[in-house]
Amino acid sequence: MSINSPLSSSSSSLLADYALFLGSEQQSDRINITVDEHYRIQLSTLADSRVLMKYHLCALPEPGLARDQLLEQAARRVCGMMNRYATAAVVDEAENALWLQRIIAANSVRDIDEGLGDFVNELASWSAFPQ
Image (cartoon, rainbow, N blue to C red):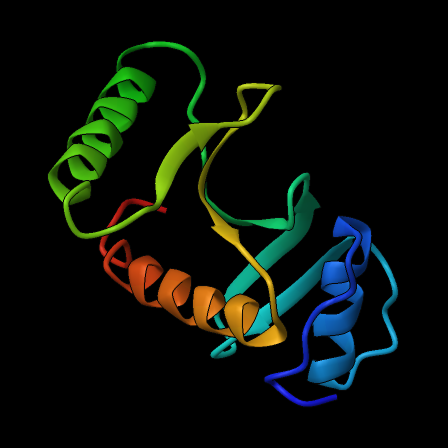
């Protein structure tokens, strides 16, 4: 598979094509990859040929002052970076963890690969954030 190969028409095939590009046999609408031996990123398909990229930033403290301060710090950081990055900080449904996520439009394997590269570059700017 070439990086310039068009992706299959269905959203569920997007990541299967990317997995093949990476040399993986994983055939799913969700894959987990590790980049630079540090960033474990989940990729999953969305409707309309979009891909969601998620990275677990940190566990959240129990409700209280420490949690409020951590979330405030994350919100300030995201707001300060909005003009440069397309990454959002989100709390998971169980309210146990803070994740960074990005959604990209993907019409080719190259789109996914470039989007992932951009996402990893954005993650590097969070390296000093409390873990």
